[in-house]
Structure formats: structure tokens, C-alpha cells
Image (cartoon, rainbow, N blue to C red; front, side):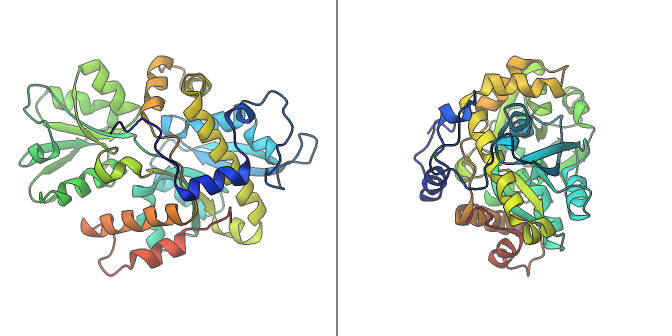
Amino acid sequence: MNPYDESPLSPARRAWLRKTAWTAGAAALGGASLMPGMLAFAQTPQAPLKPLKLSWNAGAICTAPVAVAVKQGFFERHGLQVELVNFSGSTDQLLEAIATGKSDAGVGMALRWIKPLEQGFDVKLTAGIHGGCMRLLATRASGIVDVAGLKGRTIGVSDMASPTKNFFAIVLKKIGVDPERDVNWRQYPANLLGEALKKGEVQAIADGDPTIWSIRESDHLYEVSNNLCGEYQTRSCCVLGVRGTLVRKDRATAQALTQALLEATEWTANHPADAAAIFSVYTPSADVGQLAAMLKSHTDRHHPVGDAFKKEISLYADDLKAVGVLNSGTDSSRLADRVFSNVLA
């Protein structure tokens, strides 16, 4: 199965599409009026706009739909005046900014956020954004052709608590390789992972796009695995989190934000080259062609909501318990119920 093909629509996705009357033509803007069936809170450009702060990492291609939503007017069409707050550090810092009221919402990684959410951060996950931005690489001469080949090897990562480290630890665990005893992990700055591999200090490296993609291309490395394999082919890795107090006190705004970003994500899936050009404004040193290729490899058409998304959170919680990131006594379903909010219902 080609992970980049558009798969049959799930019932939840059909319901969302019916609810929004989404079509690619409407997404392209150009002065079109609201379509029949569009949510009632979508406003005309003349209506007052609700100010909102949205945190993101402007250097991460995963967040391209945020730039698209600004440039193509999706936020404004849903009555929002969005101020972007750039966090270049880890996404747990971004989550803390949302929880403490420095920001109203943000886009981050499920495998980074679920642990602090377990600990009580007041942020609600409202939708998945896409999957497919984490990769594990080795040299072609290493003999490592699959995840099982990592046993007894050293893997370079940019952060010992990174989503990528967590993900490949989970994959190792599922094939019977103990991610703590059977492999070694070594931390390097992300931009030096390729050098560590060249020097033989590690035998494989794992990180997220765009860094890992660029290293793969420049050093002609072999992609051993990614997060579009097996059951993860249809699971989102990037998610939208909204401040809990906003969800409780101003649900319409949380709904409008979620809707606008989902539409921008769909537009990104349909126009990857244009989305790459829009995003490149925030990363002027990046090659636009490579950014477009990255977006084409991501599953921007997979952006679950409702019960489908809540199920993905629960499955990730199960995975994180298996590798000791979450507490063994945590009930995954109850955790998903607590940290998820179905603002589109």
C-alpha cells in the first residue's frame, strides 16, 4: 500500500466534510462567499475578528498549514485575528506556554505532549493535523535495513525525550527489542546528527523533518524506517492543542480555530508546492522544492477529529506506557477522555 495515496474516507471524516461543505475550489479562496452548510460562526471579512495567539515552531515543516491559514485567509474567514508566537525550542515548552495562558493554542507533537498532559497541563487536544514527519536513517554500508537491525547499535537523537526517540523506542519494543537494554541512545544537536554518523559515533540517527530529510538528501543515507509504517500509516503525529479555559469559556473560538486549521491542512494536501512556497517565507534558507517534497510525503489528508482522534490519543498512551514514558497505572482511555475536547460536535 502506498502511504501517500488518499485512502477511503472514514465515517468521521465524511461527517466532517459534510458539516463544512468542504471542496478544494472553496479552499482556494478568490472571493467566494460562504457555502451552504458552512458552520454558522464563519464570518464575512467585514465582521469583527476575535484576537487569538497561536504558538508554533516556524522552523518545522509540520506546521506549514499554520502559515497557509494565515496567508490564504482561513483564520479570517472563521472570524479570527491570529497572532503567531514562534517557539523554536521543544514542543513541551510550547505546551507550557498554552497551559499558562501565554498563548491560546498551538500545534505540536502527540508523543511529546501526552506525558505532560498526563501530569495535568490544562490543554485540550481538538484535532490531529497529519502524520509522517519522523525518520530513522543509516548509511548504506551499515547493513541496517530494518528496525530489527538496530539491536546492539547506537542511535543518535536530538533529545532524549523527543517524539522521534519515543516513537522508535515504541517500534523497537513491539518487535521484541528492548529500547533501553538492547540499543544505546546518544544525544547530539540536531544539525550534527549527520556528522556523528559519518564519524562512526552512532550507527543510525533519528529526528524529524526538515532536519532529518535534509541530512538524508545531502549525505545520501538510507531511510530505515519512518512513522508511516504499519499501524502508524493512518495515525497523526502532529496535533492541535487549545488552552483549557478557552475551550470551557469560549467554545465557539476554539471551534473556529480548529475548523480553520483543518481546512488549511486540507488545502496544504491539495497544493503542496504552493504551501511550501508560503511556508518558505519563515525559513528563507530552505530549498522550496525540498519543502514541497516533504509536504507530499506527509499525510495532510489524515486529520482526524471526534472519536477517531480520541482513539489515536488512547493508542499512543498505550504505546508510551509500554516504553515507560507514561505511568503504568494510567488508564489510556480515561486519559484520552480527559485531554481531548470534541469542539466540532
